[in-house]
Image 1 (cartoon, rainbow, N blue to C red):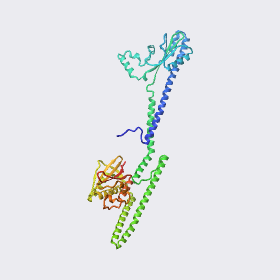
Image 2: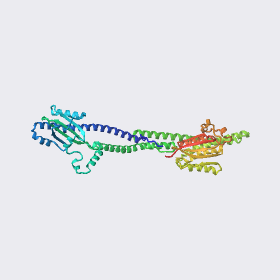
Image 3: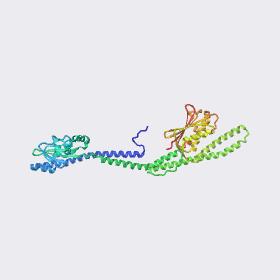
Image 4: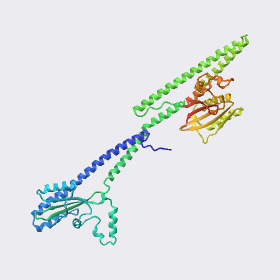
Length: 478
């Protein structure tokens, strides 16, 4: 079952996530500040437009003759700011909100005396006295009067508009010197989707960040991917060329250290292998010389024992030399179908009359290794199984990102406390396996060395129902 990860694992994904998080937080704070500034701006608009004109109009009306009041009010009024004079105040009382009271105090200060001032900022519907005076009400009421479905349309408009779509009215009533009331109302609509441009800009910035960071990080992490692939190939025992040193200074330093490590390891293994091969080769001459001299010993019993010992030493030297020669040749790795590979090994044994079987896997499993080297390791394990149990069973498994080759038998097995010791060179457990052994104690050691050189592991375990199981674990090809 795949679990969703909220936080990405890749370097590029984490950088993008961090930048997007910083962008969202910064823009969120900006929007919060913007909203506060917007509220202040609306308050300033109301003060400058409504309060200033109202205070000036009060002075003009008080100073002008009564028959000129209508002309003055008509000249000051506009489609979005309407004044009129009535015997009674259009507002029965002022608004109770802090903003309403603060604006009323500001207007009273501008007029300069203790007149009663009422101000209310509200959304529609307005009081009837104000609505009747304000002819340019929302949705053109006059045009709907002749529509037979006007009531249904009004009801739909009422429920279909969000509260932000409704117009905001600032209404003021100021008592004149003659006792009448000067009423004024201004309508302004909060722009719909005011924050849409901000969110659009935020989206564009986010997309730009993702594209720029994705392209930049892809270029910066390419050397890291190459380093990872080279390390995996080196772990498999493959020969690789030095990696080009490119990228940031920290990355080039890492690549330089990897190249130096690879060169040192390669030289170390090559020198030790060459030395091992040279020693083994040089030992062949004295062993041959000693065998010739042993032939001239008169004591038959001592002669046979010496010749047997020298033959055993010769086999050890030949095995060691063969291993060193294989390592020195540095066979090239290739992609191999493990099913076909193991089936061909089992077929070779069956051709010479050995009981070796292979259980095919459900589908093709392909990985990369040096075929001849791995074949030698598998054959060493099969030889042991055939020698000590008379038969061998080959099978194949897949465990996550690894592939397992199993070589099993029905023999006597190995004591649990000796399962690790048998991998040491020239170690033989004749008492636990058989009285007749043709081995020299290098087969398992060579097999494990080969598998380790491919970045894998070789383990032995006793089967519950009897016998021994050898498990080769190799990394699957990417």
